[in-house]
Image 1 (cartoon, helix red, strand yellow):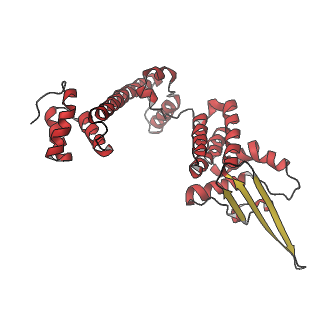
Image 2 (cartoon, rainbow, N blue to C red; image 1 turned 90 degrees about the horizontal axis):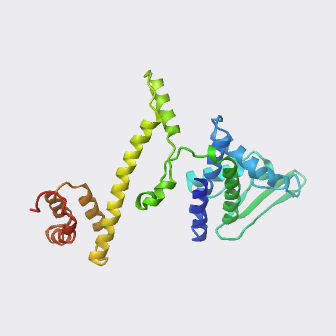
Image 3 (cartoon, rainbow, N blue to C red; image 1 turned 30 degrees about the vertical axis):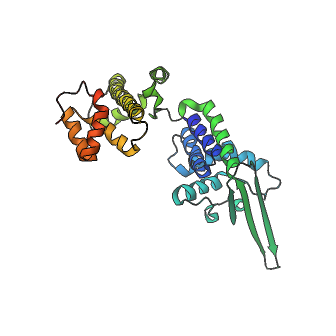
Length: 297
């Protein structure tokens, strides 16, 4: 799954959808941190510790001086929170402990350059020093840095990362040859279900084969529905030469696939489109209704 996320991030960057790329990128340390520290309950600790271990510590070692600013786990976690929860891609310096990384100004450049600048101005008038710290970073540089670390981590620890995710590409449904490459793992789900049964005092364990059979039947039904949906959509585009609006096409498809008789389809068409359009649309799809029982009213 990490590879899929990174491919989408790269697509977003290529199409200059920088905020979308940043949002997905900032979730990668969450995902990898959960795999690295499965017994740690604190999301904050998992995120910061993973980032520092695989990215931040290397940047800290490459600093010019001990007082030089760098992107550590605290900064990135703070950016994650302000951006994903408040929509503001910036840093709240009051929530960063490391003095050298408490930026007064954090500027994100939306572009395809790769790099960052950081600096500080120290003013001392005899009564003590005041320091202003700033960082300017390009979003592409930040996304690529985190993606590279996450991809390397995934290649080394892939079996521990998102191994119970059931997010299936639509091609699995529309292109049968792809189904052989997709073998869902129901072990985590089976374990969760059995733990819930035991917690409720039910001394029964459901075998994974039963879960697998049930899910396979559901997937089979979905395959059939999506396949019919795709064929009907293509048919409507061809017979109408693209003259049917997307909204009407969606309504036609939903009515046809959810109805059990010609009468039901005809009746729902009239309610959805009015008498004139209903007759026109029904005439279009009539050749596809041979296996539906009854006659249109």
